[in-house]
Length: 139
Image 1 (cartoon, rainbow, N blue to C red):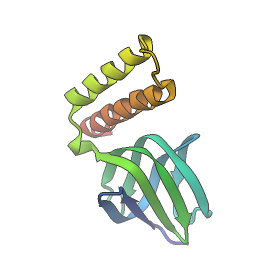
Image 2 (spheres, one colour):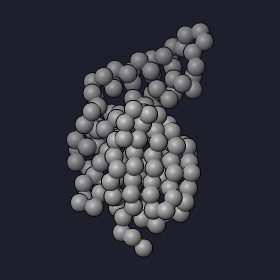
Image 3 (cartoon, one colour):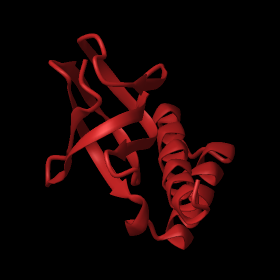
Image 4 (tube, one colour):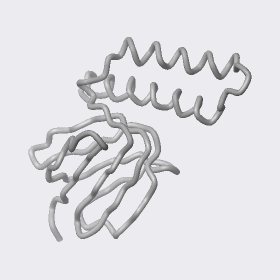
């Protein structure tokens, strides 16, 4: 069995990564999924959260993702996500502002507010904050 797998992470706008990885933690729709080399084939919906993976050199990559699809086949992991933001790209002050706005909208809902969408906005802002803080703490 191989010691690594190929990981590809793409949004509609760009290919973020194509690298060899030793492990990954991916936010699937119903919880986090750990991936190691030789993982069984799988198709899954993605959720909102922090995706991490480590490459052969031991570098840990962190990003916030929001929805999409995951495919694992032939020792290749393909993450096709609606939106991804690398930890280094996150404006924490803006993400905190977005989180407060989304939380306020849920606490004081206006007529016709989509509660499910509001919850996604809260999770998205929190994932961006978590991604940025995760990398800055060195963990």
